[in-house]
Length: 232
Ligand code: NI
Ligand code: MN
Image (cartoon, rainbow, N blue to C red; front, top):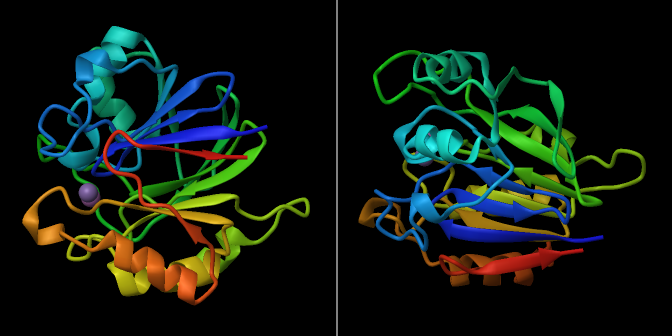
């Protein structure tokens, strides 16, 4: 069993599970590095980490066009409802839901979460996925936190196959803390996210990957926008 992760730029990922396609944090048309336009995205479900613009900008349009079910916190679900998006599964931290290809659990993140209209966006989150026989952790926007050790702890004898971590710094953890996060999470594969979109979050992801490899923490892949990594 395997899944394919495609980074379209910034913190937006498409996950082909073999039995459905998940979209994380849709940000396409106003993302300067995006490899896709929102109108071309096909997906069966959408997972949202928090309410900031660079994670929900194309959420309403894609949800309405595709009718994909949206998994998000209670406050974002209310915001979507006001805009006519009804195929929504509201959740909160710790909750787990069935998604195409497996399950998704809403995990803690240390960040903030307001919606583009200024309303309260609830707690920010990460996603811990068991899909297509693969355990994948999307940290979302977050600082480093020591409970990453708990998130990476094996369940049923199985640890993380892949972790997707922000490295952009300034608004999330930067490269140094993302190395430490990898040490705590112990994934087989680690992928950088939330960097390179604008000059303030420019990073040398190749140099970061080299540090991961020198410390023998994981295999780091560095896709360019539009690039894919298969995990199996
Ligand atoms: Ni954010
Ligand atoms: Mn962000």
